[in-house]
Structures are given as structure tokens and as C-alpha cells.
Image 1 (spheres, one colour):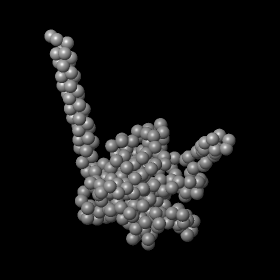
Image 2: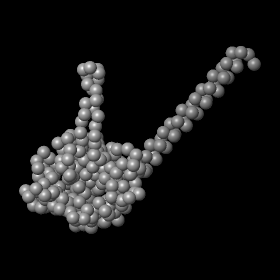
Image 3: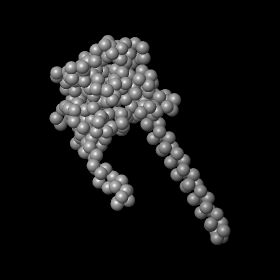
Image 4: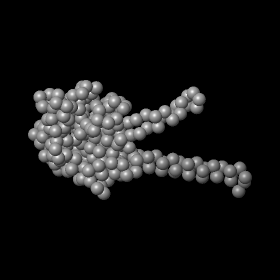
Length: 271
């Protein structure tokens, strides 16, 4: 075989292999995309708008025990170091944050072990703002869940079901945390409602207050039932009143420190 013929034959062979691998890569990419879509068929058909469900977090943000949830200490400064750096001291359950199962169940999943498929989920918003305006310790009850289902259809498998009590409007005011008597007062879920959501296949719940249980709870019934079941909660959500009751997708930026019981998170919704 002549040298020119040999070179041409090698070129044809290489081109054929390149097409083969390019096609295989494209097929694999399509397979990954299809797998991601099929893994969560109930995800919202997004219109492209993104809403931040996270409160800005600083040492003045209200906490359950009244102590600052985050402390800043300057470690490096532009003068003389040439750059800026803080050392942060953070308490896990402050700001907009995650409650992992381990928070209320010894040996349960820590925040770094939360199934990633549950961190992107259909978002269902149950609005109890009308009754919360009358009762600061109002609860999401089974009747509220049933009314949502009647209006919007079944709770999607793996959904995050969030309570909109209107509490975002109170942020910066003492009434976000306390009643006029100085005692904790804010809405939350009832255990009967979260039992119903567990049966429906929801993977997480969220509140726009500082606790999954209402402020006047004496037994933390929701914490002691929902979290030990392997599910998780989100406390301190913002801007739920800017979203539709159904059709949004929530993106839960859970922290991933080993063995954590929860922690501050960045929560976004696409709708």
C-alpha cells in the first residue's frame, strides 16, 4: 500500500472513531438528563423567575433562646493584610435553617446525609395567614391540608410543604418572636397535619417562623414525630407570600458539615 493511501486510511479510521465517541457522549448526556427528569417527574414547569426564601442573617436576627446566632470576628483586614476575612461563630439552628432528623432523634440522619434528591422538590404552600392574624399561635391543621389538596390536587411525592402565616412581614419587629406578654408566640404545624403529610409522601416541611411547632408548644410534638421519621424541616423561610400555592420548585442549599444537626441554609424557589 502506498504511503498516501495508508495515511488516508488512518484518517478515515480516526474520523470514524471520533464520530462513534461523539455519538456515545451525546447519548450518555441525554441519558443523564432523562434520568434527572424522570427522577422527579413532579417538578414544577418553571417560568424562570427565582425568589429568595432566605432571610439576611446577622447577629441581630431573632433566635429561639434570644442569644446571637452568628458572631463576627475580623481575622484579616485590608490594612495591613491586603484582604478581608471574618472568623464566624455560628449556632446551627438560627437564621433561615435546616432541622435534620438528628436534631431530635439520636442516631438519625445528620444534615450532611440528607438525600440530595429531596433538596430539589415541588413546593406546596399552605396559607394560614388569615387565622394567624387572629391567633399568633395558629397551626396548620389537617383541614388546611385537605383544603389545599381540594384546590390544587394531590401532594406530589417528595414535596416540601411550607406554611405561609404572613410572618415575613413581622421581621424586624418583636412580634416575629414574642407576644405582648413577652412569651414565644408564632404559628407552626400541628402533629395531626404533619402525620397526614407523612402519609401523603412529603419529604420536608417549612415554616416562615422560627419553629416547626407553634410558639406556645409545650411538647414539640412535630419535632419529635416528623424528624425521627427521617424527614427534615426548614425554619425561618422568607417571601412565601410571593409564590403561588402550587407549581414552584424549591432548591434547598442545606449545609454539609459532618454530623451536623442542621444549619443555616440558602433557600430559593423557581416558578
